[in-house]
Length: 342
Image (cartoon, rainbow, N blue to C red; front, side, top):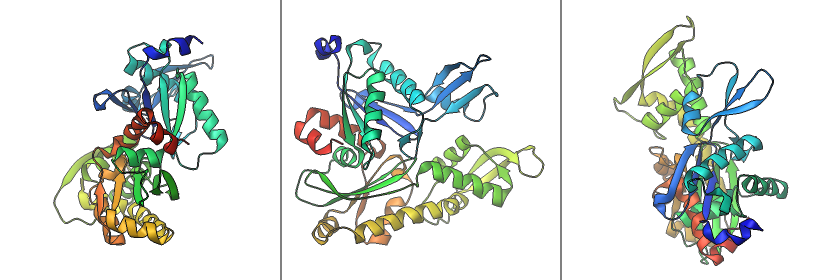
């Protein structure tokens, strides 16, 4: 009742809790806040858990904590796996962006994967309410991402959007505000990090952590074979001796490590085209494919998909923010909100 009376004092808030990053948008683009989806938890001697750090501070602790501290990433493969930790993360971010005015209870649009079950939807809604939301609207990620990328999702025209995130890749064919066909594969940035770790162990005898693998992926990651001299030094532990060692890693090495993941994404896109109704496939041939998500910026991924499909492929502007931007747009547009509601 209190929140309902004072709801007019709050601002609408769009939230995209991703495997790697949580993005919250309040107002225009200047209101966007991004932070790693990570929470550092201290386990004291009585068994109680205490939050030590959230977001970027927690991410910097990854792989560097003592035995009584764990860095937890509560979202895996696009799904929330630890709700109490996710609630703490979300509440911290909501308070940070609202400037401690959480008591007024904002109206929130939460992004969810397409195909989320009713039980999972209820859990996500309860999570947002527990974190301080007054009203919760669930928005399907592919539709939100397409809207945020500027696609006319309510038109009678086929659009294909590929959302490449940290935990998974979603491919959706959209028309008339609905998802006609969707395919999801558990390949994303996290899997690429693990592929880089395995490659360095096998070919360089060096063990590195997740943060170092992510840095290599961001700096040298490529979806296509390369023939340049670009390199980056990385520090890790020698597999045989156990001592610290520095290795100069070439871009061709990182590209080789990522080839399997890229191929799986490309194969999923080709399979999705094969299952798309003919008239919508013709529309997509004319309009092309749009890449969104944090990993859409992987060098050469657009060209790899384009080579496999023979279609024009473009990377959306600020691809990582498309989903949360589309959810924010839906809160301001009732027709779009109805179309994207999960």
